[in-house]
Length: 211
Image 1 (cartoon, rainbow, N blue to C red):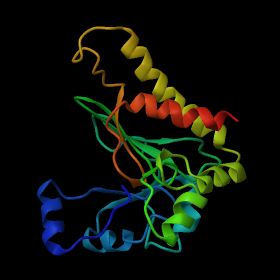
Image 2: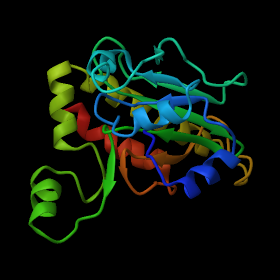
Image 3: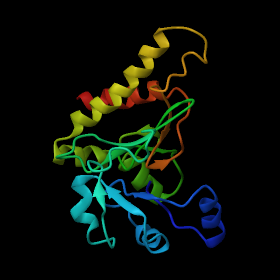
Image 4: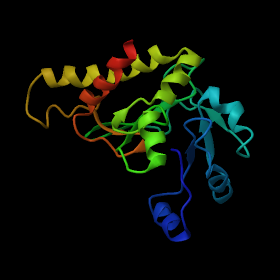
């Protein structure tokens, strides 16, 4: 997902986990190193959201299918690709189900960058609203406005947030509340992984999008 090329030593470490079978490009912009992966792994299947396909056609050798074609990436269905709104939104989310719960992997729809010093970070971070913790940036909101897809993204976040709140309300010990349908981890397109109170964070991200 949003693959980044590495030197041979680190690529070898990656390959110890298994030969990459799928290359997921989450939008029309995160394709900088996609061609390198296609060259290194000729059989890799390259997948993107439907609305990003035409943009990526100019950047990569091939697109083998979209999120609609590859709803799940394994036989068990533990890795799947969701679309916020297939006809408008240029992004989706990779959902990974593991023993401790669900991990949501986003593209540019969600950031988690801290404020940093310097003029560049002032413009990029504070003026454009890209830094300061988990957030849907101003640029992302503008793109959603243009594609009329903000409400679908909000509902997607809210749905996962409510799943977590519903499970917590059932009580029980900590292990019993670790449901396979509860989000325990959020991987943003840029910034640090969120692994504390993930359902609450999703709820806080969704609320401002209602306006």
